[in-house]
Each structure stands twice: as structure tokens, then as C-alpha cells.
Image 1 (cartoon, rainbow, N blue to C red):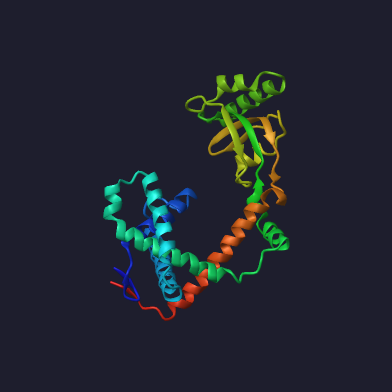
Image 2: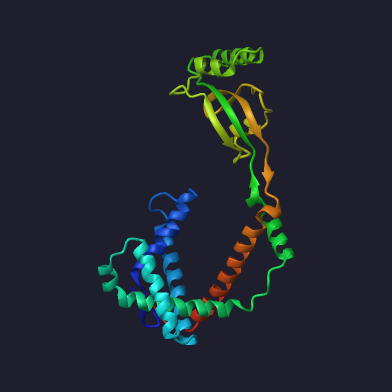
Length: 281
């Protein structure tokens, strides 16, 4: 059980945050199964603590909203629940808790507005500086549509396999259709020869290094990678590009503004922790 200044944290809030942190890491392929669950749970608890501390501070600083404002906001809340399929019986059962949540939300909105009102206005120079520092985020990597022929050396003398691949490359360079050669001679299980579009993501990977050194329509030399001999042909290629500032300036402004506001809240939560009583049971 987690208690902040005497208030018991809702376990559901912690579980929701835990699931979000873990899902984000899984999307980035940074985690498998349960190896970092303890870390994610701690992050979830810390986020919940910050949220409760800020909500408590909002209640202390901001007076309750006027009855008319509560009524209007509460009706909007009920409409939203109904739009998402909630029955009137469910809403009646949850009426008091929903009303309390509505009042808390109104106070928090007024509270955060007061915290953010003194932030200096963002300038174009601010946005340009952020863009330059994060330009890699707006870079589209080179991409190539590739055909692939692979052979796994099986005999005692690997020269036979290498010579066969050299001959296949020569035939392709002499005008034979690479796709047909690949279909007839690839040793890949399943016989797939069309790799589709591949983005360059690992510049030191031998396969990608070879593929993205080729020009459109070019057949690679025979090369060895992951215990196999390979030939690839680039059917079509697209060069790397960077989205211009003008195209992403609105997105940048939104993100920079959001980050500044979150930093204000985080800094305040850090200060509130200094005098808070946080108990884990």
C-alpha cells in the first residue's frame, strides 16, 4: 500500500502507469517479458506520487469551482460516458465519484493554468534551436526495394558454392533476369526472393552496408554474411531526406510547449516531496 500525506494511492492508477511504461519499452524492443518489471513498477509509483502531490496542492491553493461551472462540466462528463456506452444505471451508481472527479479536474485545470501563465512565449529562435538539436528525429533514412539470392555452403570445398554464385552474378550482369535467377537458385527456405522495401537502420551491418552502397538497378558482388553467400539487386532506391523546419514547426511548438509545462509540474512535485510524508506498507 502506498500512502501520500495520509491519502492512500489508488492501486489502479499504479497498475495503469506500470502497463504504460512496460508497453512503451516493448514497442522500442527494449524489454521482453518481465525482466524490467521492478523498474517499471517503481516508475509507476513515482509518477503516481507526483500526481497525488500535485492534486493535493491544487486543492490547497484553488477554491472549489462555482456550482454552475460544476454542473456544466458534470453534464459534459455524463455525455462522454454515455457516448462510450455507459448505461444510466452505471452512471447513477458512479454519480458521486464522477462528480468528485469532475470537481478535482476543474481545480487541477485552474491550478496548472496558474503555474504555466508566467512561462515566456516561445520564439521562432527557440523552435529553430530545438529543431537543430533534434534534427535526427525528422530524418527519413535511405530505403531500397531489394531482390535477394542466397546460398548456404554445404560441401567440403566452399569454392564450389562461391563459384556458383559468381556464375549467377555474371549471368545477371550479362542481362538475365535477376528475379528469375533468384527464384530458380536461391536456397532460402520458402524460396522468397523479394525483400520489399528496406530502411537503412544499421550502417555497420554488413548486409545493409552492401545493399545501400549499390545504385538503382545494380547487382552486388558476392558477399558472405551470417554463414551464407548473398547476392542482392536494388530494384528501386530512395535517398535519405530531412523534413524541413517549416513542415514540422507546428509539431515542434506543441512538443516544446508540452515539455516545458511538464517540467514545471515535475519541479513543483520535487519541491512538494521535501515536506511530504510518503509511506510504503
